[in-house]
Image (tube, rainbow, N blue to C red; front, side, top):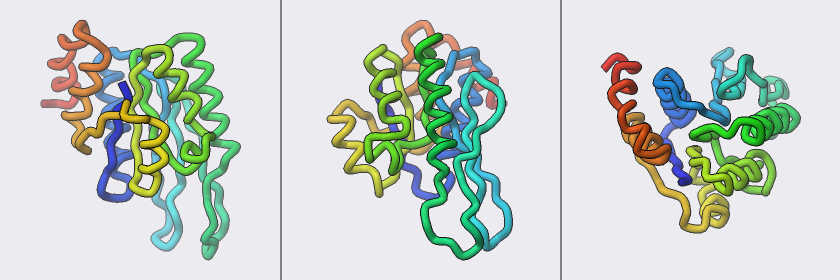
Length: 183
């Protein structure tokens, strides 16, 4: 019930998970979690990173502007924890059919960020889909303990996994997913 993708290029995983979330929401699934939206600015500056909390309006900025030549971590931990709080509250109040979390990143590898939310969702029987980079893979594997299933970074394959995790009643929506994508 814990699926993950490892995308080969920068930003690909964010776009893939956002696309999957959009198609599942259009098909009527109740989703929880966040997807990351990156906005490019100037060519020589890093992108702006925002999290869109699924099932809610608005976005939460999780990047800080450290200046043109800064090389430190741009993550705004306060923004991330705000998103974690919203997702945790949603899980508590109205458990979704599926939780999508943009990534198991450095914060999660260190035991913070969405790590407790992933554990709580799994304990409640809510399947979780996330992205994992090679840099954080060893920590993710220690956390997941063989419970995780690697998925190819292909939207249709990830959608199939999501629908299978949600259950047999969801199988009838596979056609709706294709229609929602204009296929």
